[in-house]
Image (tube, rainbow, N blue to C red):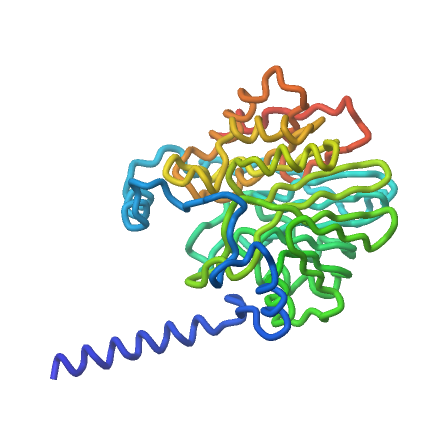
Length: 367
């Protein structure tokens, strides 16, 4: 009797999990014409997308189980700040569209005005970055921006489908305001499932030049990372971007480890006025899929950057380093470099025309 009851409970649990995984936020796998296009990509091998160079998720002496155990139970110091993170609430609706501006919205989310176009990158306005609300909760003070605060967006850029970059509640709330979506191969399946019109979705492979208007070009470029929202790895493509207008050249790294692609991009596109790069959620056990701050500093130089804006920290604790360590390390690593390090608070406008603009070390005031 007890054995039968156990079997019934397990069956009900499995059914509940199966039904939960059918929720729209998990997305659907590419199929049909979309899958056919994916299979024609040179970066798609044996049913998965591959990096340009060998990229294991973990170092050889680490298993997924051991990494998870250490992540959950190892000693953590200052993983989450005690204080609320200081922010600035800029009214995005009233900004002069004629000014080129970049505003960090926390983690890897950015609002930009470039050449009269409004661009939004990897927006996550939820207070968590996970399938469930009690995991990866955002630091206090970091989630004051909402979809309602956004003006109409000419281009929504999505680097990959991980939860801290592609957020279902945020994207669906933004849908009426989005004129174009640019993403890697396969990611468009999410947007189509979530109600976006097909003609607004532009999926691209690495080394693709998208020229929608003569004065605004987006280059879809490689990153060294992986994709997948649960148990379906690497079915969609992870990417970086370069945005080019007559006055500006801006690079966004997305997530990823250090590699030779940075030097190649810098040489091919003749450098950048600003590079926006991941700086955080790294660990010595996964050094190939997330850069250390010192590697990011080297990559910024290889990209021929005039200025560096670090992100991917300051909002979520997805690794076991202290919350402010990435900012401390990139500040030290940027000494005597050829680029200028920009460290705005969340919501603080970076005026690309203003070469004299100075930002504080705001994290030093936070416990």
